[in-house]
Image (tube, rainbow, N blue to C red; front, side):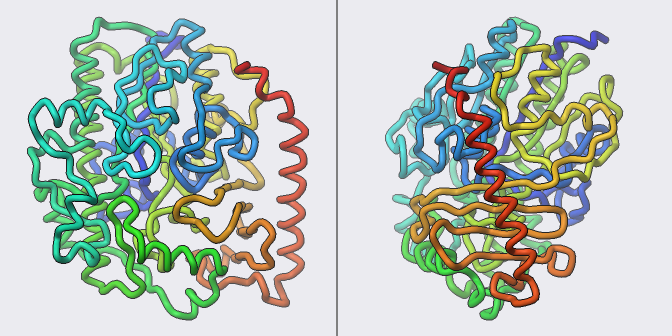
Length: 476
């Protein structure tokens, strides 16, 4: 097998927690195809996203720069350049099928071909954008389900975003993207080297699987973290305000509840996990198609997600917070003939660190200014310690309305969350409180650690601004 110019297949889901893959220690999951990637690939078990929502995370991933550097701080911010342009310049055939969450949606971003499929329920930027899935639904005279339709349901506010998919199964957005990827591979003349980015819209809400995926999970005993008034009372004002906001507004067809019942929480989680299993099935079909079309033997398959989902844990809905259930994601690199598999790598890394590794594997030039640090040494089994700290950022958004900017700094042992201009924050001793329940921000015995992490945060931001001052010269 050739060891140069591999095909690279990058599969990215939207809003998938780390604890959603059976082979990573979560036996309630049914994910045979992702399990295969874990068994035969290299899995990073401490991969953290650079932003706590879709667009800024993806912009950071595909530029190798933190949100405060590239200026994409929230959903709806414009971004139109990426290191995919470097792959195209090095003669890769670059194709995107599915969600990327660029804005504008149709910007080339370095792809020779784009088949855009965006959020299932769009109410922010591009609400009336007509993507490939919209066209397919229209061609079959089907109406896309969304909050305007769901609002007519008598129990809409009690469903926590969990709904039954009632259209033909193949018209579900995740089915549609998976099938389109297979169709492209089957019909487009074989072209190598290939960079194929496949973006599944799920398991992002609405949580809407066909019933055959949901029913097994509805019968399972699923983990539901206890949420106490003590924990909620110790959260910063911006987070408490966000909880209230999410009970009043139905973002992505999810109406949050202050005290959802165990039955409500269980149904929401069952539907969410069922969406993951549906995507897993499509990943298996994509792998099979890659093999049938002669791509797989000389390919590297990468799987990741852009952030997690609180699913009512810590009393929260969706993302925007800095808990590990939001900021920690799966990252798997699979190429049995190229990299020794069956390995887990536990060092800290940022999701964007896969970017320079992809460029190195492809033999493409890297942008002159990068804040991402290549994971290729770890993938190749070389000595690799990982980062000392990882960082996550989020600006004021449609949900996070009571703070201008929040930043997380996390080591293996501690986490600090800073809110710009606010005296409040979060501090967690992860060794003794891995579930992040007890906020030590005002704890007298923890003030030295708080100052230490605030110093780390300050130095990181100052160094970042200094070292990336010329980053725009890559895309002028």
